[in-house]
Amino acid sequence: MKKVISLLVAMFLVASLPAAFAEIPVEILDNPYLILVNKENKLPDEWTSMVNFSVGKNSLGELHIVEAETLEQFEALRAYLLETEGIQIELDSIYRSLDKQQEIWDAWSADPELGPEYCEQYLAPVGCSEHHTGLAIDVFLIKDGEAIRDNDAMIAETEIFAKIHQHLAEFGFILHYLPGKEDITGYSYEPWHLRYIGNPALAKSITTAGITFEEYYDLLQSTFN
Image (cartoon, rainbow, N blue to C red; front, side):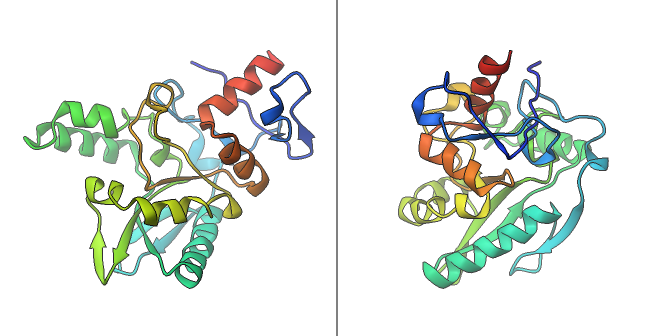
């Protein structure tokens, strides 16, 4: 299991890193917003005692548990997109307990239209999902008064998501599952999966560099190990 590196805003990557990443801030003290959870890094057992959770509601009246600051910044992003771009995004899938993740895995695996291969492509093993953190937000679209929630239908909305993605960093979010990075993240491209990291400057640097969260950690590890 990879060692999770926590971060401190005041420092910067040392000059030995590639120039493209020279101004990505490095924080070396505990910061829960920079936890790395993936197939190789399970959620810490004490996670729920490290963060504050809140409850958000989308325009359909559905309630979702979200980490408090993540929810606050998502609502700011949502309002900005609606006002400036005429794009409406809504909370879809956020926090999931371990039991809920197992329930979804079992249901999708048994579904003849999905099955185990679909789970491997789009769903994390229990304990390895970013959705356990409350920092990852899957969104759906409201377009012409209709909800677009199907994955393939959302992937087809390339222009809308391009506009969404260009504003994520301003509110401390990154797009985690990038196209062409499946071998690194372990998942196919998900334009709807937003990850809050709490630092707009860091989010902008990662986004501009075109790297995944995993690659950012690898750079830190190669520098400090």
